[in-house]
Length: 267
Image 1 (cartoon, rainbow, N blue to C red):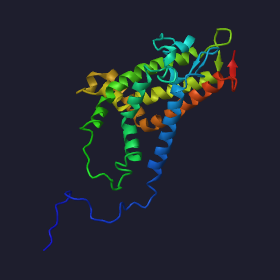
Image 2 (image 1 turned 90 degrees about the vertical axis):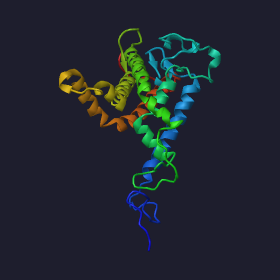
Image 3 (image 1 turned 30 degrees about the vertical axis):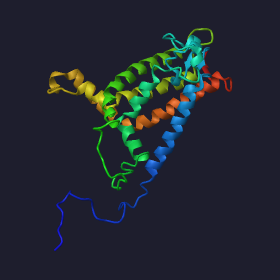
């Protein structure tokens, strides 16, 4: 007489990898292509070491902010400590890029995205996972994902710097006030970066977590409510900001290299 295992003790005994009829491979494949292309572009630009700043209008690429190499010149708003000889070996924004990379790498949305796309763990909901073991995020190196809340603090500070870069972009040829297409692009980019940063799950916890009674903290409760609204679109902001960063950097690269001229709206 055959025995039947208790529910939950074993996976369903079916030959098929999944019973899903939709094309579930689209999401992991598309995500893999987009992420790989973005990482390749960002890596090349971060180490390029040129065409990152337009001094006439104070346009600084977000991939080079804050610029801390001697080559930065007027773009070095916060000083420099990297010698020119490190060009091509160390990114000019060596202070910010590692923290921004770790912030996104440990982000809850990105975890889901690259777990599915690169590790197939699992590749989609309702699809069998190829890995035999699952240890969660309790061991090295994935236990490092728990540092996400601290990387958020660094990302928040860097967003302030990006905001300052956007403010400086309101610069005219004669040194006065001016607005160009580059100004608009940098402002839109920093707004989207703030939306992504503030919609973070860690930000939501920092704002309203550990409170036992919201009625006694009306300000924090209101802030928690606003962050919660943003949090609903956190995944969308995560993807949109990848695009806005590339657009901002590419436009500044083309203007700084003399390939195109900045479209000026005022002065």
